[in-house]
Length: 257
Length: 257
Image (cartoon, chains in turn orange, brown):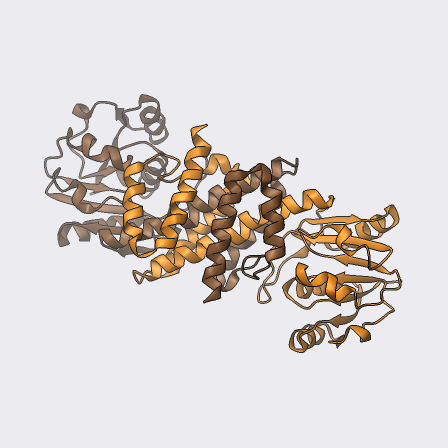
């Protein structure tokens, strides 16, 4: 008999995860979101019910997946009757203990990926990290996770936090640097397109070579001429000049060793 | 009749560029490098001559490609007799004027890519930016560039410098953040492999979506709970905590607008 899931949250992660579960035959009962637009949008995609009221959350789910902003978790979950069903949050940085007051059966299901509504992702290839409060729940979560990903690991809350931080560097901060690069190019009317092969090759390289060995550029060559020319050329971008200095210094320190 | 090239320099860029030229039927006459090991290694790959002495650089080349550290260019070129042949440097940040004392025919050939000796790259797909001191030389360089790349643009020294800076952000700094992520993971015995799908997806995303629209993570959500938890968890990594703060602040400022 297939399991019934409810989703608390209808953002990027909830969207991709609920679709992946539905594709694997799990039954999505209902979507809850405070924001009607998001709730309806995702419910429509899945052809399921939705609600914007915590009191109307379906009590018949086997598992409740919580995919909302960390800071909202406590407040939202405290208003929901879970009847000790399995409640699973999907956050990298929230400890399992953050939800233990809301059910006797709790877990974490953390997929390590960046999700945007417009891009399809292959859940099979996404590393999923799970944790739970009992071996029974761990077994249940493991089965669920294995059914949608080829790479499932058990990890505790402390380690998961560091994993999340590493993802912030390798994805969020990286993407911000793409944005800065785009802005610098725009100031000279150069299209962002010219950077695309470089960005892709930089990411492809570390699929094979350790990033430490893949480093190139003026900072790792200690090329002070270039660095000072760049700092001068960044005159109109004070904030980015500061970042340029901090990151160059960090590269410098790293390879000096 | 095919053109004869000499390479001044035998590093990553010289290696990939000379191979690409040879594959397209250009004749590599000779490799010069101060370092015998590098000179010999590249000369062997190409089955051509090499020298470590500036006095023995072949005077019969049509074009001299200079692919050495910016800070060494003046010193090295001042010792070479070019007989006013076309001298072309390959640097992003060196102005064309930096080599005009060494020949009456000068140019720049700047391929926007990260080169590591161990990785093959498809030169066809690499954007190449050229500049030169006369329309005759520009025409010659354009023909040479078009023969190995599908994407050739003419660009002046000022713009090329900003282009190089944007590449430092989008590649060198990005790769350093991969290195930081790897180090953070290592502290908890988590293999770097788990980040590979995320790194790749982050780079693939901006091939289609503007990086500004692709941004995810705690900083863009203004999720102060997560950010302060991360800063605390980075206790053992003082340097990376500073970077975490600076980049988060920059994201914050960017999306506040």
